[in-house]
Length: 291
Image (cartoon, rainbow, N blue to C red):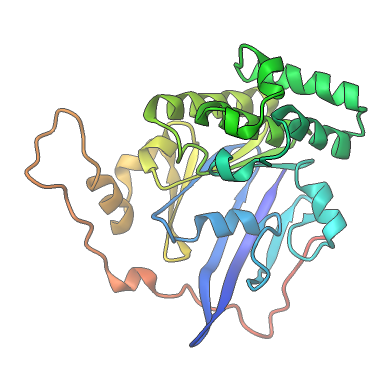
């Protein structure tokens, strides 16, 4: 598996014209664990959703290259995108209360992925759904599979979301703020689960979060985003040696147990951080991978 993103740009129309909200994002990853971090509104979720064509209709995308091996995430027709989503790339969304189908039982939502992408029968898909839930640490898979989303706790709902993302055995798992609606104890359990699954299944993992220290515990490489572009890329083990003032500011703003402070440090922003990275020349035709 090799994911290539080169000069990705996303714009939205507005009263004063088009506004570019993701600006020149580029990175390459293989079967590794990377974290994309930054404040709310920095463009993290838009970047990963662009890989699957899951942006609002009014969004306009451009890129020199956006491909998973030979699969294209922008120009492919919708049937090809459906084969890409779930089958090659699994996607764990933020909050199960809003991401799961409220009128379908949890097990049916997992089984549906297996029936569509793997061609399994209803019985075989249901059986494998129970096995998958059991493998995610759920003690009573049958009961959880027959429950509706509103009957599940936040941690159980998030495990169901992960099961849906893993149902077709994808090569890449994208987790977009997977612990934002959970308490600290369940957050740690979900993160350990994602780390274990990535290692056992040999998947690539993209973890999106605003919590830099949390991501650094399981990611091998970290991309720091600010105002729609990547301002720093570094190995997770080198986080303390971050060079960009924005990354240093994020680290410095964090409270620490055992450290006495009268006030938390306030991040001092430089307008130069938000300057555009440079637009793609109009004469440069984008390079797309085939569907």
